[in-house]
Length: 355
Image (cartoon, rainbow, N blue to C red):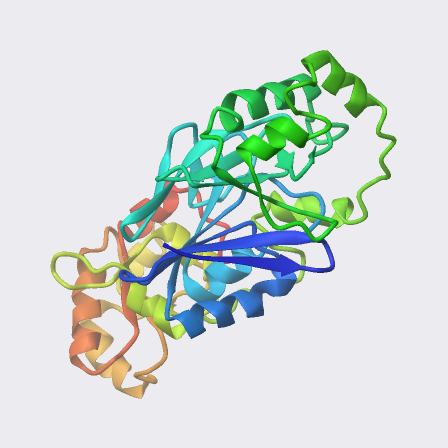
C-alpha cells in the first residue's frame, strides 16, 4: 500500500493519503481546504485517482477540502454516521469497510471528542488514523461539540487500545512535530489515557484544562457540516478525468445521479429532451435546463461545442440514454444521462437545487 503523511502548518493538521499503486485508487483522510491544490498535485504526480475523502469527525479547527476535491476530481465524501452532516455520499458506521483497489480501511467509531468521531484502521491492523480522539501523548478536548470525557475514555480503551500493541497510530494533529506513535507507546506514556489513568482521573483532567476558544470554530463548524462548502463557493467545472470516472450503464451510456447533477449544477450544459407538455407538466423541470425535444436534437446539436460537457434529462432516463448515445455518435466527448430522470430528481427532493 502506498502511504503519505501530509501536513498543514497553519492548523497543524495531518492529512493522510492511502492508495493501491496497482489499481491507482486512493483515499484521503482529513483534508484541509487550503491544501487542496497540494493534494491534487500529489495525486497527479503519483498517477492516482481519488476515490473518496474520509473525515474522522466534524472539525472545529479547519475547513475540510472534501467539497472542493469532489468538485475537481469527482471523489465521494464520507463522514461518520453520527456526525450530523447532510449531503455526504456515504455515512459510515461501526465495522463498515472502505475499499480502494485491493486495499481497505475499517471503521471503528470512537465518539467522545464529538458525537461523530471515527478511527480508520487498515485491513492488516498495522495503521490506525485516530483523528482527534487520541493524539500523541494526549487527546482531543471534550468541552464543546457534544464532547463527553467518559465516552472518549471508553472509546480509546475499547476501540483503539484493543488493537495490536505494534499498530501505528496517526493522529489528526500534532503541535510538537511528532509524526506517529503506537498502541504500546500510548498505553504506557499517554499522561491522560495511559494504563495508569482511570476513567475518573481522565474526567478530572479534562475538566481542568482551561483551554481557549478554538480560533476557527465559527467558520469551520458551519462549513464542515456543509461538507466544506462555504458561502461564496461556486460550482467548479467538472475535471476532465472526472468524466472518465463516471460509470457507464450496460448499454454504454455514462450515468450520473440526480444528486451529482445538483452538486455540479452550472458546470455543464443541461438538456431536457422531453416534450413541451412534459416540461410544463406535473414533474416540472430543472431551472437551468434547456428544452430540446428528442425529435429536434439532430437539428440543434450541430451548433454546440462537441467538447463541452452535456447532461441529458427526460422523465425516467430512457430517452436521455438514447440522446446520449446519439450525441456520442456525433462526436461529443463529455456526455452523460441523468439516471431516473425527473422522477428520480423529484423523489430526491431536489426541486430547488439548481434554482
